[in-house]
Length: 231
Image (tube, rainbow, N blue to C red; front, side, top):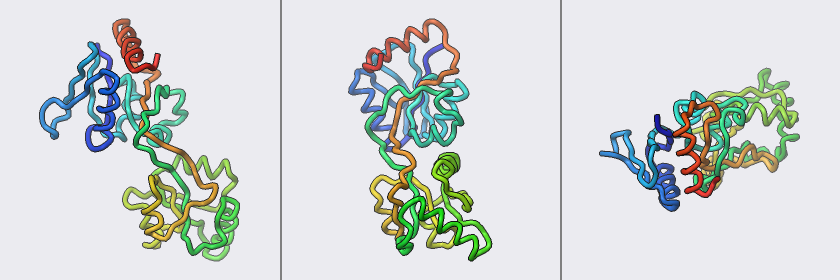
């Protein structure tokens, strides 16, 4: 066996991950063309690079098919129930920052907090006969956040496209989505609730708690963590 390290397979997340490991003496790279999903690791023995989409990495960690993985904290917490029992957070990597936030139309001048949203949701249901719709890709985290903050009378609707456009398209009344700058929200006439921050996310190195490891793999892991100054 070898220690399997899963990293994003393309784009800025892949490049930044390669840079982060490279700065610490571990060279990661693609083997072949950009269309191939094979990679190499130099600077340490017995480590295999596995190139995956960022969204696949939580699943592969949970299944124990990779030992380590780099992905967003938002994806781990969304895709893995009781995530901290499934993976261990080893290190935030300092890039890929984004906030998961709750946003409403800017024309809702009286809705600025979660308490305001709860009151608006109750009034909306009385007026329209159905619950206020909140569009999101992050059902688990949004549901838990709203429950913990006492917001009722809403329904989550799935959005796998441009979530910010759902209010304009009248398929939702509010949204919960990832934002880095807030520019797209403002461009779509949406505002973040004053207490609407659900999660601060960034690229993070995780370890699978349930992945099978031989003694040689444990030794490799200790060596790798030492090189990364994480021991």
